[in-house]
Amino acid sequence: MRRAQALVMSVVLLAATSHATDRIDPRLATVRRAWVQPVDELADEDRPVAACLADHLARLTPIEAVKTKAEADVILRVGSTSTQATITAYLPDGATTLWADNTPLKAGFGVVMVHRNSCGLANKLLDTLRQAMRKARG
Image (cartoon, rainbow, N blue to C red; front, side):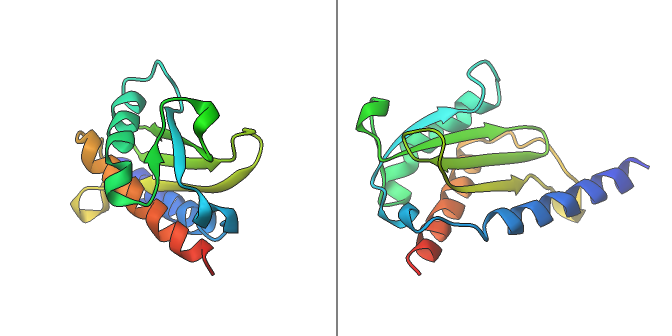
């Protein structure tokens, strides 16, 4: 029963991922300064992933992490649960979403698992961001 639930959850998350990446605002391709924040400041899973993402941002994308929200072209909100990791890019107004993605966390054989490597997960999210920026260029 648990395997069936995990499989159904994986399929739903994959469908959500492909749907989310279809809607990319072209302005995403032009951002160069980002404020990175966890979705939930108190969540043990969100903070380390957001910290690693900010540290690796300039190495893996053309975007640099900034020290204050006022300096940012984009706000990146990063979250992580036992089944998925999320990244959402907002304009600084906080109301306009440029792009969002959900990355399912899976082990071999399609079994959903908790991802224990925060920096590895951050790098996966940065890879999806880089791909979205390429698509946003047109």
